[in-house]
Length: 422
Picture 1 (cartoon, rainbow, N blue to C red):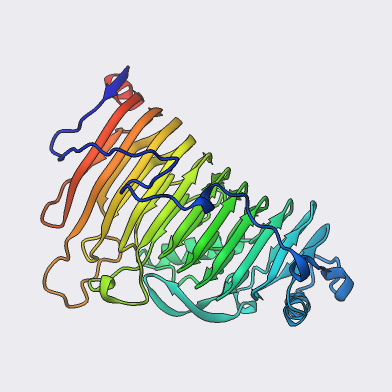
Picture 2 (picture 1 turned 60 degrees about the horizontal axis):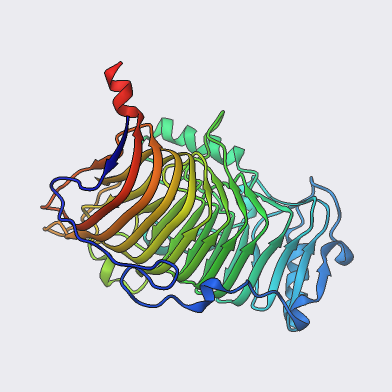
């Protein structure tokens, strides 16, 4: 039965007035950057460095990390350039790009990651809520101003071996963490700005697909992200992890993976909000995307101190487990506020899901539970089919407060109720 739902008992409701095309949910103006076309490399940065012109061979069985890195370094020495991956499959491990260098994958090109973790560099990474040494990603950009991955080609993480290793470890030790199951992410950008991912397909990551840490002005446009759920599920294969970033635009993308489709991160722990390595996220626009199977279109957590001004609009669900998921960690102070979800269609599990999240709970000696907040959330003009309870919200005022949540013009075909009546 189709229902129009406007209120949920037990939550304080308030109306948010917002014009999504012009302002953020808190009323501040949206930067014009969000409506401009992505900048393309110009001048020296547009100079093509085709890797096969510099000794890299078309042989998918030969690890060519060093040879490809030399091409990147050469382009940087010359003041910039675009490293071109031509048609063919090229095997590599961790590559490190510099400012004014770019990656372009031609149609039919595959940049394939090694499935031997010992081939990868070990570098400082913001992971599991802290800065620590970990396995580098396949493609890395540290402290760059201007970097892009573009084209019609594929970056393939070659993750099957990593997935099998993870699940084997979990069978031996159910409490096994990501840090114990060493795996490379597909792409990592840290302390960078003016980053663009456009057109490419990113698939089969060993770990998270893309991870952006403390980046500003990032656009992810018209890309495909894929990781399988069977026959071997790709664990923790998050699509886009936004980790303490500002001014972030995700548009026209297709997501299908075995974990969070888009995750808002930023740090965890009982004093995470006081750690300068952590940061809140702000001004994040997600629009015109297709979301296949995965845990949620947008998830806040499980390691996130906060997010403000997050918009999810004009998107289609095609099997995503949830539209919006707020993970409330009782060992981390969190503040999720000014969130707008509008014009969502298709089939999902839950419409909104807010629950405590206690995985690897650790107060680290703190005696009290740090209070968290979720507020100023508006969900409007949505027409979805839910296969599970549409509004699945747990209130625990001793741990977190929920307020100012509003639903307007929401149409839900609640299939979970139909199933319960059978």
